[in-house]
Length: 386
Image (cartoon, rainbow, N blue to C red; front, side, top):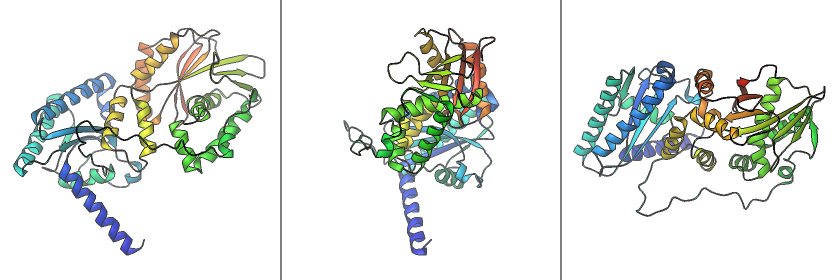
């Protein structure tokens, strides 16, 4: 890299970091591993609620000084996995206070009091964690600021101001290749179905605008691909459906999403649904609008939804039971890797809970699909089916 450009980038990074610290206080709860593995699913849900209560208590202690509060949970990002934090820890809970301009004494008191409240919470709950802040570990805070890319700072909006809308790509016309994105009409073989998905994936990987439109599902075919075709492709591979079998796409208004006719003439009906927490669609929009790092408030909203799992999966199954499908179809419930952390241990904990709280109903089988890895997990199945 050009030395002048490198120097400019370093200066800009330091400037942004200084501005961030003027407006924010960062606290880190450093765990040796993901707490869900240490505590279990029911205990972690209980701790999530208690942690939120502690946050409310902290904000209530300084109602005029703290105007916003954010939190999120994360391991070290993959691209920083070769680095190690100054203090031990592999999984972290982050609490970020947005603070108005106050005296230095008040700021110190906010930092000290908040640190003490977090420390008291962790000790009372017996959590194996170390609380980090500018007070006791400034090098750690600098490290986490960098690896979690907390570059975006919040600016307190004027009273009554509305947040700006996400940028739109609606004015961009579809290219001929985008128009070819949709599947052929009528029945197609499994081989043709999977080939079409591969071609579309290659197209999206090489077209930034189209990929943005795909994530925001600005076209119906993009929606179908993301919410129906990709989960089905995972199931076809999981069940090892033969290449010459035929797939009939239901699409909008059809009573079922897919009908698969196998070589021996037997048929499989497949219904697909997504497990998404409240406001989950806003997370997808935020990723597209801000590809270089989510603002803190978007991370908080995502974390709030993430903490509710596996309830969204159970709710998705229950909603499909109410429809009353005929023909004992297969139900596919897919979930994004953003919610599973692509961690099999977490998924297995979810599955245990789902099997106790949900039921097969009129479906012949129910599968969970983690879309990021196309991982398929059987939840329920009638004897003698498949």
